[in-house]
Length: 220
Image (cartoon, rainbow, N blue to C red; front, side, top):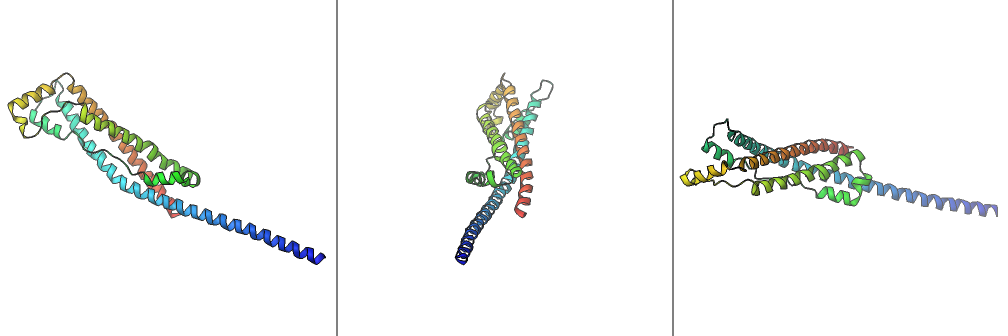
C-alpha cells in the first residue's frame, strides 16, 4: 500500500512539474516572440526616421532660404532703405518655400496599436520616440499647413514672369507693394516661416537622438 501511495505521489509530482515546465517554456517562448517583434518594430521605426531625416533637413533648408529672402524684402521696404524694383521682384520669386514636411508614421502606429512599444518597450526609448510623432511631427504638420495657407492666401499676389517690366504691370506691382497692408502681411509670412524652421530643427535634433538610441536598443 505504501509503495502504491509513493508511486502515486511521484506520478502526481511528475505531472505537476511537467505542467509547470510546460507553462514556463510557453511563457519564455511568448516573451521571446514579443522581444523579436519589438526589435522588428525598432528596426522599422528607425528605417522610417532615417528616410524622414534628410527629407526634413531639405525642407528646413528650403524654408530657411525662403525666409532669408523674405527678410531682405522687408528690409528693402524700410523708409530708410533704397528700393530696387528688379531686385525686389527677384527676391519675391524666391521668398516662398514650395514644400512642407509630412513624415512617415505607419511603423510607429503599428507598434503602438499592438501594445509592444507602450507596454513591452524600454520606457525611456518609447517616450523619446513618442515625442517625435506625438509632438514634433504634429507641430511641424500644423505649422506647415499654416505656412501653406499663408503663402496662398495672406499676401496679395504680385504679377510675376516676363511681363514684370511692362510699365502697367510695374505700376500695379508698385502700388500693391506700397499698399497699407502689404508690409504687415509680408512680416506675418516671415514670422511663420521662422516658427516653422524652428519646429523643423527641433524635430531634426529629436530624430537624430532617437536614431542613436534605437541603434543601441537593436544591438542589445
